[in-house]
Image 1 (cartoon, rainbow over the protein chains, first blue to last red):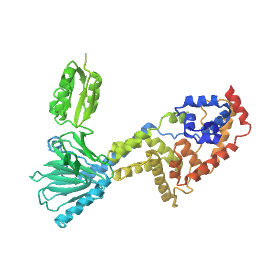
Image 2 (spheres, one colour; image 1 turned 60 degrees about the horizontal axis):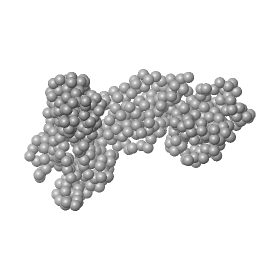
Image 3 (tube, each protein chain N blue to C red; image 1 turned 90 degrees about the vertical axis):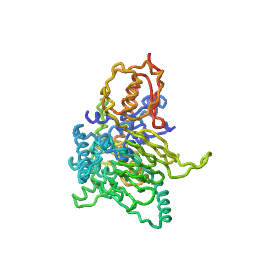
Image 4 (cartoon, helix red, strand yellow; image 1 turned 120 degrees about the horizontal axis):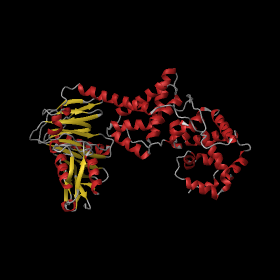
Length: 362
Length: 204
């Protein structure tokens, strides 16, 4: 506790809490009133300090909300034109074609990785590689530009490498797997082959059997995240873990709208959902999300199919819950919040599923 | 008073802006746009203190955010986003001004700093008090520019001493000394005869 009773005028001026109080931003109105009653001899100092702070006021600039909005829009336009220009340089904008958004087996996959993961393990990994394969001489593509860089791999798969990203790959794929090493971000369009396609990002491997996805693995973050938009991906850590039951390799299988997080601290993979689940099967929404006295269980079933996410709930408890509402293009989580609010239920995401906890309705 | 209304608008919470910064670093351009939006008033006000040309200040803020976007993948976590942005804008503006005036300005240099203090007169009705505040205003106006800048950063922008030291590229101790000096010379402007009056006011 600060000894305010010993403060001089200037001490008060320099004090954060005092300044906030004078400027009307403080939360301690009661405290200062009480203090003044307790130490009446401090009134003069406090008043002086108040005057000093009042004098230090500066008029604001005339700047309308509209001007600010214009500037922000100008900024957004500028960075978007830059991005679009570089994208349109490439004739094959496959990731923009709607068909790929739903039909591709694996369409989005994001991995972020910490610097230590890379520094420690990738180096180690490369060291091992060179020893075993006697300088298999990997090619390296580095994108230092501000636009994406298109690459075609030996098997015909194509890669769109994002700015500030590096990809190491074999000029000719040999052996059992097609393997690439990524730092940064890349969109892959993988040609289906019997050999699996592996993206190595430090401690975490992402394995897919075909088509397209995005891997993100910039060095700055402290965790690895893999997000899958559609299809099936397997993600596993490269380190063997010694557990009581023996040595196991940790891994998870992800389906559409699921995500895996590898926390550096805990050093284990956990399964969750993507930040922004997408409608995988819009054709399921025959009623345009319009519900009239519809049982909640039926609404959930519909969401389950449309988003491809598994829900767990007690059918018996939800039996009497009826929904009358019109939903639209809000996010899945907004929809859930609304449904929960209507029915007094709550939901949580556990292991890539949504668990609904309800008390039941009258 | 317009200034008061501006003041009432609360600054965004540090917790929220730090989260926006993290989102921006993962490649979320809207998070960066939001950071721009919530800090624009403060940045613009700050910019106008260093350079009185509106359009140049606006352009510098644009360029600052565009270059931030370009490095989103490599930029690190910052301790306080607002303090970071204020310093980054200053660096950029001083660079622009150096080019324009063919003279090199650095953070620790004697660049121009234009501020006009105008006392907050809310709830002040007593004529003698108004007079005293006017005297203080005048005193503030006569302070050396570095001291004015320090007072501005502290009492208008609400930066911490560490953040100001970083912004002005001076040591913490020199900063304290500078502030002490400014406040002491201010007090000279109005000391006489006030103490008695204050007691009366508070008794009232």
